Image (cartoon, rainbow, N blue to C red):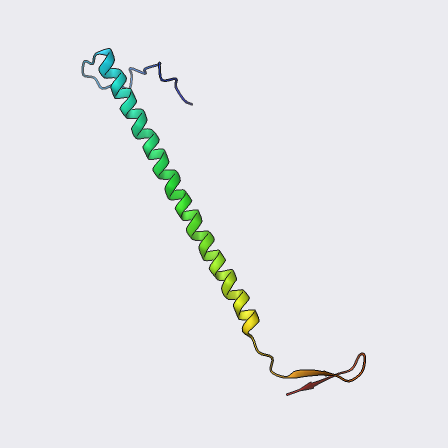
Length: 88
C-alpha cells in the first residue's frame, strides 16, 4: 500500500521534536531509502535469474554440441528398399 506523499505518518517519525519541514524531509529521505532498497532487491533478483538462464543456456549448448560431435561407430548401406547392412 502506498501512502500519498502529502500524508505524513507521524507514528514513524522519530520521537525528537521536528518542525513540519524537517518531518517532510525525514519522510522524503525514508521514502528514498525504501525505494533504493527495493531497487537493489530487484536488481539482485534480476542478476540471479540472468545467471540461472545463462547456466541453462550453456548446458543446452553443451548437450547440442555433444549430439553433433558424436561419431558413428559403423555405417549403414542401403541394399534394397528395406534392407540395411551395418558395417563396422
